[in-house]
Length: 164
Length: 164
DNA sequence: CATATATGTCAACATGGCTGACTTAAAATC
DNA sequence: GATTTTAAGTCAGCCATGTTGACATATATG
Image 1 (cartoon, rainbow over the protein chains, first blue to last red):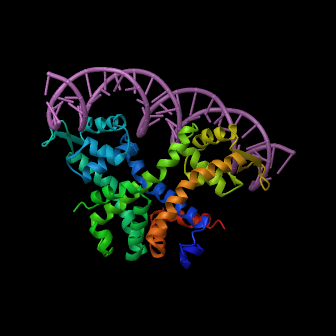
Image 2 (spheres, rainbow over the protein chains, first blue to last red):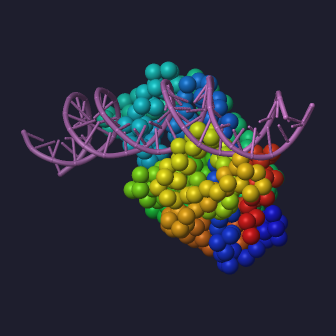
Image 3 (cartoon, each protein chain N blue to C red):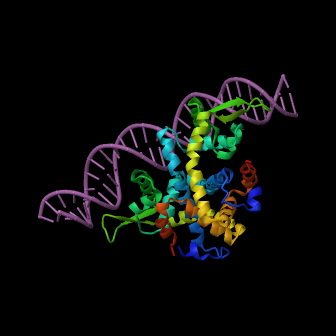
């Protein structure tokens, strides 16, 4: 607690401070995924389905290879999950307009509903944390997380983040 | 990018802002675990082994149930990983002093070495991100992540975070 | 026309979650 | 002191989701 309250100089990066940073990330991620995971289990889905639904919802018309690029999994892994979602009517694909080899992925009405239900909890959690922590803290959260991302990925991630 | 640079008022929590918060967490976690995962694979271990080694290293003498409480997995899941680590000489256990039913877990020399190798990368990553982001940002990172953790967990987490 | 690319698919394998059932040893309680 | 609860371990089986490798098809591109 001490350091969390007192403020400290991060140029003195004690191993202790770094380990707190590691652990906070672990605990936050653990709890962040907890509830959506529970909802998904009831539907016979897993976290991988959530990620796919999330990023298609966020980027309607995204292609398979773009999705692979975000998720960093093999196409075989993605395929299993994606086929499942298509089969159950959460996702559909249209042939690419520019390039007809591509599949442009979109959520169906059912998919949109699921996406909303799943991310609702996470958005609420972030909203609460943001409100409690304040504007400056939010800016810090964003800066540090961005710094944790692989250097060669940052540009790409930042481009994707500006959805509006 | 715009928002990341310009600063914004998080009391206006637009869905857009919240989704950026979600995605940053996803990308950071994805890259945070990437390299250690690769090292582990070479040794025939997985991420679960990392977590166990990490938290035993951080809390020498931790009991099995305390570890379960941190990881939030079943004892059968933990058992598989833990037995493996014990069999290969990374972890050993002593009978509890207060309560002889307990097993107090510790890293062997070999375990300490592995732990160091694995967390080195993550500590370096955090250190870099902290340095680039600055002291205030670090404080914000900590505040927001703590706010993301389940409310009923926060107390316990904070107690565990003060290792020194 | 030849080659490269985007996607899909089949098969096999490993990790690591889960549930459920049951055991043992020690502590705690009545 | 007998009973109950707790800490830990184990066996068996199931499922989700990651991997590699091989191969097929349609379309773009040189």
